[in-house]
Image (spheres, rainbow, N blue to C red):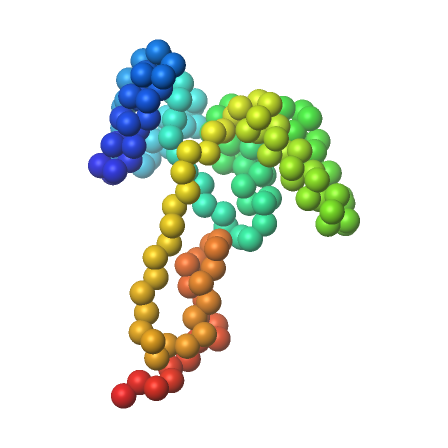
Amino acid sequence: SELQKQRAEWMAQQISGNLGIKINVETQADWGVYLDIMDKLEYDFTLSGWGADYNDPMSFLDIWVSNGGNNHTGYADAKYDELLASVYKETDQDKITEIYKELETKLVNEDAVISPVYYTDKYSFYQNYVKDIQFTSFGSVYEFKHAYIQGKN
């Protein structure tokens, strides 16, 4: 989209101005071509996004496992894979949280595989007579399971 192109150009300017690294911005409007480029690792640097499918850190962390279907970076690290696998064997939530912290530290601070740049917001508009709509942080925007109409004239 035009907005994504503007973001990429702004980031390229910032990197050039602050780090002296020149980046040629190329955008890909065709989703299939973009995915093919990502799968073949035919890029040096990319802006891409990810939205969690469910309310758990694993929705962000399991995509970086070696040879994972959504790992379009070529990142492969045996320690990361081992840590990730250990979550599935652990039942103590405090220990799981510590493992999640280790995984995030490895991705962002140590290996610098990803660099989160921004987060999106969700805006919702609805009539005041629609009650008990649940607005979710992850997955679909709305849950209508318990919603009902009250006071509509």
